[in-house]
Image (cartoon, rainbow, N blue to C red; front, side):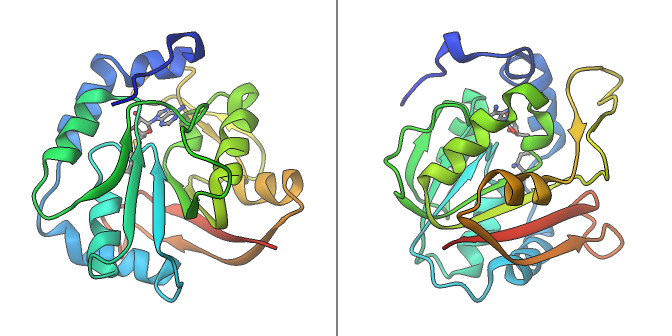
Length: 214
Ligand SMILES: C[S@@+](CC[C@H](N)C(=O)[O-])C[C@H]1O[C@@H](n2cnc3c(N)ncnc32)[C@H](O)[C@@H]1O
């Protein structure tokens, strides 16, 4: 298993690979009641797509990968990148989901060839990357995706930082859809939406954008 390259570490990654990351993992466990909600959310976002491989960058214990696995009936090759080694080990040990690839590294250094994966997604991950580091992460995501990029993150009209669990320097909101659209002319937004917490109580009012490489 590939380890995190420590020269690539950031203040945010140090939190996610330490006690802060352990606390997150323990608060956000897998539970069977979450499955139908998660499957319905991913059905709306990517249900009709013909994809053979999916990578989640920042997959943690793989809740989203489990929903996606169920949605596609287990036929899509699933991959995960996660800097927190304990979270990735938990995902790899979970019965009922088989990964074609799992790497203990960050979005800054995805160990896959250009265009290796049909759809690459993040959910609640770009918000935890400092603005100055964001292009390094999204460049990797766009490089590895052959066809689709799915971005599921918190929205703000203007880039802003807000405290996360009482701490500064850990959560940044913006219009991530516009960020992708402006930086990558090869991407076309083919759909977008909102996972309203009133309906999807497993998600925290997340905006999503689906881009296709053209
Ligand atoms: C809020 S959690 C979301 C987990 C998962 N995507 C989900 O929706 O259940 C943020 C995740 O991103 C990971 N992460 C933080 N910074 C990252 C980075 N630079 N590259 C990849 N993953 C990162 C954390 O370790 C954590 O697993």
